Length: 494
Image (cartoon, rainbow, N blue to C red; front, top):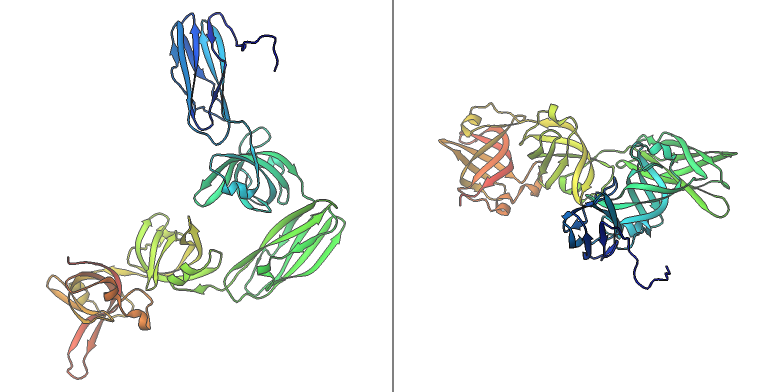
């Protein structure tokens, strides 16, 4: 700007004057002070909007009296430029003060830039809509050549929420959006984004047949609209061994692509098929997913924990060691090889499950914040375990199907390797024929529990097992025992 006056021009009112009507605060945080000269008492008020409550700005005083007063504006550091307006009211007149911190603007970025950037920063990113998970709020996935990003909430043309369908966004469209980054758990998101531009795709999937194929395999069909120069198909490398293209038929803008899937001898599997076309200068893509049922993989807890996150179904059997959420069935399941967190069991409240029960579930290998867990678990079977005293279990009939949980002090150890020992509670004692590391232990996996956990005579031991009676063929003496014991917990006598 140019002026014929060498001095800085400021807004002058008779009732109230300020040394500067523009205040700049450093991006790294700090304070800036101006002088207010008033003929009467005055008030200072921040202008608040729906998008910005201006909580980041602190004013040293909200009121003042006649005369000169120093007024200080402060703000913490920011990763994005921001601005606000403060109104000084005096004698029915209003002096406006503009506050700015940092440079106002939006950072243009790739998906990789967003993933590596700080939370709270606003980014503008361009990519293809590859999946839509919610058509009310506008939750979807944006993908470019550097990665994929979850969009959590999309504003409409009037910056309103819950009107996503008005945008007409479809899978395959190239979209430019801007919004702040948020990390929720392990998911990196842009939230409540504004749509800057939509470049409609020249190819889209209208519908599919048999998107979930059976174990035996079969045919999957995709119906496309293609306005470009032909259509090509990309099957991911990891699916080439079981999925192939059987035919591509195209008439005008309509295309039908058929695939053949082989029989599945492993666990559940899925893939994403990409369709491409071009207008001669620019490439357009869209995609669809295909899944195939697989066999349920029977696994130990250790094998399950070592598996990759995915949709393969695993069958696990073990003892419930604790219940974290009684409504949803979030619990810990342990067998001889380890312990896994189960993030809910379908219809848990109606199952009547409790700590100590031996259950078999089917679920997929999932993770939260990098920690493994069982997802989508369904209960297949349960062996109820009843907590009893030693005196009570001594009166029970012999049974290989009824399991009891017994607690007592170890009075002697007959076999260190297998954990053959005597337990006593009050005046009652029982022989435990084997205390193994957990459910499902066989062979050498049954050995070594006492040494591994430092369990000795005098310790308090809780064990699960069945009541049996052993009769010595030579002496004819019968001994009541708890057979095939499953370790649950122990307390050191010290």
